[in-house]
Image 1 (cartoon, rainbow, N blue to C red):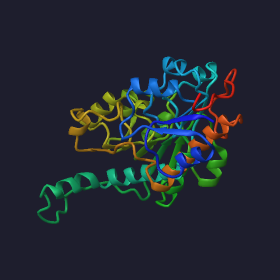
Image 2: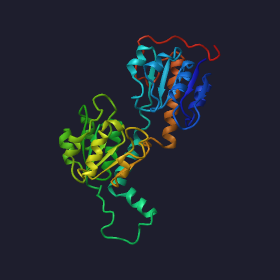
Image 3: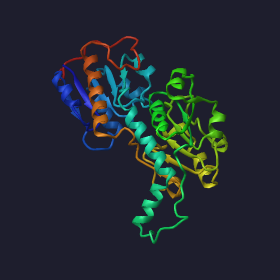
Image 4: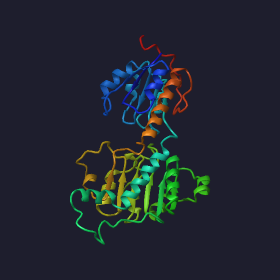
Length: 333
């Protein structure tokens, strides 16, 4: 059978599923990603790899793994692996769609609420002894109920966020590569051009995949179009925004605040100017971090590997190898 390398300790039954299929499994210990040299060694002997978005597998790493038949990303996104490069080398690339939309939408809305009501600022000051008395002007935030939400990217996660916003009687504008009339009818959302959305929204939430077209999608111009009290929420990828432009917009009070679950780079260096700004909330890329969702992601990633190593088409393929590699050698040979 095959040899599978898992780049981090994973929750749920992922490793058990691989072992039950007869595969030998090596798991990289600890929370930090394996360094490049360790990846090279592990992949050179692997038939399958279960990876995280933090594991950057470039052409050289993949080409140096002659047995590798499948890279199974435990994520929806796969900007850490080029699917076309993998396909040319005969390697399947898979992901884990459809299991984290609701959990990620929960987090996006949690960030929106926390930033709107200054939860992070007031909690931090309370711990530091700053709570002296009730104040009629202390920590004044923004109402969410009845406000206007602009959603950039109306895929599974954007749609799930829109459903939550309906419970707050929000007016919902969305911008998407393709118009979604079925979602408009179901949820009463309104399609808008980017300029119109940015100018009208009290809250802007981004839910686009990272592609060449969406890299730094939001920059100086876009922040300048937003309302002075608007709050910007990002649970997509750090590089879909120009982070320097965000710092400038926050410092100059061009916008009211930001709530970020993703940054560029990750982790964000502690000396980065975003940490010094009181109107920013930053969390460590935890939008999908619930016990149940991460377990489902790990199990789905494992089943993708089992399928490929059994000679089957994986259920969640991102690419299709030009010429799939033949049956892998046994773990012993």
